[in-house]
Length: 225
Image (cartoon, rainbow, N blue to C red):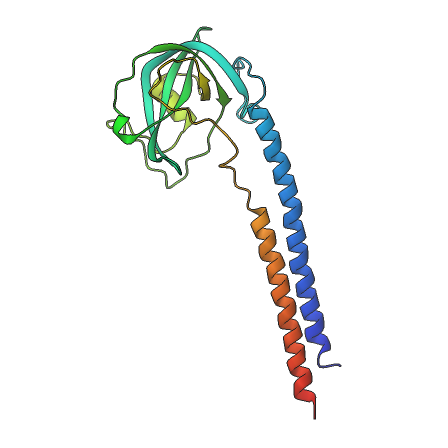
């Protein structure tokens, strides 16, 4: 008994830790799902005019509605989507009827349509405020000559377009014949891998327990006369 007691304790302790990690990930899953449900509800709630001084944290995903002129000033952000492939997001300056100059993410065009002229048009746009976190130390600098950006950097784009650092991701527009397809904000891109992590920890707990049982069985078998 003294020979199998240490591996037994070690095995049960390891199993308990792995099970605890699995339970913890399930708790994190419930927490994350509640956050995503709250974001979904917020995204689709009734739109309001853009606040005078929107806060990047408090007003993230805030549904807004504005009427004004979509100007011909635009930036093109290289991106991709599963159902489309490579595409360019069209970030345009928007002169609201209130006198403010904002930015709107109109949606996407295919690469061959990137440089197609798009005339200014008056429209009412409904969408969500967003401050995407898409830049890091590996993000290439924008190519102003080719008008190609590699991330939606709100502050930098506002400087290039001469607007407030406010970006509306268009969900709906009153345009009757738009060549740009809206790509509205949603929670699909927000990572939620806690279920997979939980399954991994629970699976490791089962494997650990089986290995412990096998190790003890081998020791008992070796001690038999």
